[in-house]
Amino acid sequence: MPDLYSLVKPFLWRLDPERAHRLSILALKTIPPQILPAFDSFPALEQSLWGKCFKSPIGLAAGYDKDAEAVESLLSLGFGFVEIGGVTLRPQGGNPPPRLFRLTKDRAVINRMGLNSAGVDMVVQRLQKFSDCPLPGPLAINLGLNKDSENPPADYAALAGRLAPFAEILTLNVSSPNTPGLRALQDPGKLTEIVDSVRTSVAGPNSSPGPALLVKIAPDLSDRDVSDLAEFSLSHEIDGLVVANTTVARPASLRSVHREEAGGLSGAPLFNPSTNLLRTMYKRTEGKIPIVGVGGISSGAEAYAKIRAGASLVQLYSAMVFEGPGLIRRITKELACLLEKDGLKTIEDAVGADHPIGEDS
Ligand SMILES: Cc1cc2nc3c(=O)[nH]c(=O)nc-3n(C[C@H](O)[C@H](O)[C@H](O)COP(=O)(O)O)c2cc1C
Image (cartoon, protein in one colour):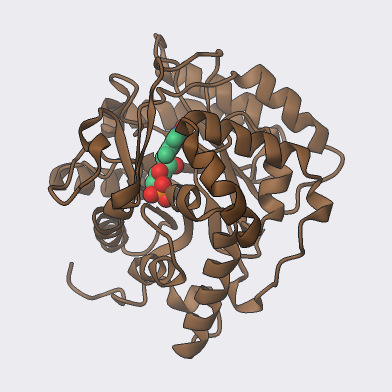
């Protein structure tokens, strides 16, 4: 895989980033997953969370496969789980192009896609084909909000109700920076209404556990917001947090020509702020709420740092733009080696290892 990607990369990079992304999805849709090389499994990386089995803690973050076009191939590339979406209730086109920028010198991306989505009907139609032949790993679905939504709790609930039968995880996206007003829904009062209506909509007639409900938060929160969200997550027994979405901050270190473009910044410059937020969240929730750590991961060492800071699972997106899909196997192997080097037998032993519970925050 890495060799193939380095062959096609010069061609892809001459294209506009959105067109290159589209081509990569088309390639994945075309390649039968069965012909992708089987990936090494590492028993130490396996874990059970929310009653679901994860062969690896390394997942694909939301935003790459927004409309569930290549789920099976993505799982076959070696991801332990894949998050599709954001999916919105009604189809919407998103912002006008150009809206995706590579910041090559900074190993970063800026996007202002604006939650472009084919809509829930199309996504359900695509996922229905897996009803009889289960996917090779857990599926997470990122729930987005239409920009003209007049009733966010009702829209999130309708989306969740349609998508729950296909998902192991539902992620409430209240943190994309490109939908005006969306981040205001991180306010605990508003979030309570959304979570309550989603839970009512997802609750089945029987006692089957259903998908885990996660909340994805922004890296641009004030200290007060972080405390409020931690308290909210504990009091509402949220299944998990995804930390974090893209940032609207622009670190002074950015060197690329596109650094002033409006939108959310992801990739290497997001690693430190998102890991610091994850560490704080883990401490303030006393390690009681599983966290998915995302932002700037491009190596096994970075995945391991997030896990030691408190992540039970991790995700990545931007690094794949620069390094291609071979990156996943490399990171997985590096992570397994790091665990072994530290004498840790399972991934659970590493979660939050940097700050044992009881340590002052
Ligand atoms: C082009 C693009 C589209 C994205 N779309 C979504 C989205 O629809 N929903 C969401 O929650 N996050 C979205 N994200 C954010 C990613 O899921 C992730 O949180 C962020 O990119 C940080 O991870 P990374 O540094 O590994 O890319 C998007 C990111 C990019 C680059």
